Figure (cartoon, rainbow, N blue to C red):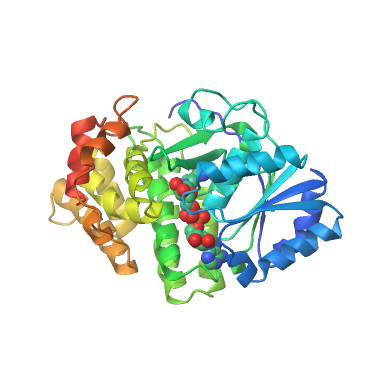
Length: 387
Ligand SMILES: NC(=O)c1ccc[n+]([C@@H]2O[C@H](COP(=O)([O-])OP(=O)(O)OC[C@H]3O[C@@H](n4cnc5c(N)ncnc54)[C@H](O)[C@@H]3O)[C@@H](O)[C@H]2O)c1
């Protein structure tokens, strides 16, 4: 196991009716709140009214930024920064999924920076200060509710880039599984794939002697696999939604990578696809991940054997290591297909004309991944397998 530091200051408030604690949670942080949300699903579900009633109960001034896109755009971040400056905002409250939360993080940092918030995504500037934020999560997927990361799309330049800082961890996140009952089937599927992919990026590692981290990862995967199907079957299954929601948080809140060299190549590749075609992140991952697995598994076949046996209950009797590993990879693809995720870029009307550009962008700072270091030709091959 490698040395590591674990830092996570986010207070998680989990369970039925926890939106009723929003006022009490916001109160210590500010008096002028920017409420950030997406396309209006929170109005249809009544959550918007609940949030406003909590905020009016503590007498804060509320300004709003709505219309945050899935794959949130830099233009929305700019709008939010402008409101923060003009209105002297001192606290940001995103209510929604990862896109809304990510936009809020970029706004929080951008509001305290003289230049363009995009600089944090290109490495031109580091985040040195940020407004505090707290979240009300409505979708199980990204883990953004309990980490310091955000992913922003620069639509004009067709680039999707991440930022990360200890300063943008949410002060608190409210996770009420009932708020996820209205998540449509396709978004539930995207969320399941996203959560599993976060685990894959940390589980398929060359680091040895990490049994606790491996079992953490395998338990998150098994919990998602079981409860994901239940949540798809019955969107109002509280226990299934609750288990999925908590799995999403644990998949990316810093628990799994302790002492582990992680990979993240597949996320890098997917970001290049969704930067150009604006497809849901989870859909892109469902297509690319099993192809990445097939491409790299021989680098450390025993890790894929363990995955097949422990996560998918593949019977190893009479099979070679290669056969067991490939059976686990096939089980992954079959599961994604069973829940309704796409298997090829073609299903999303994406052809091969931009493969070179995507492969080139994916390795712009050098080879990506650590399980197998991927150069441009490797990325292109994985994308070709995904067509
Ligand atoms: N910050 C991170 O650590 C991190 C990790 C992975 C991915 N991401 C990024 O997060 C973004 C995706 O976020 P996401 O997967 O949470 O989806 P999302 O926030 O983009 O939401 C997807 C859709 O679901 C709708 N929705 C959300 N909650 C709903 C509800 N309760 N009922 C009905 N509809 C609802 C939204 O309006 C939207 O149309 C991508 O940009 C991705 O790159 C961030």
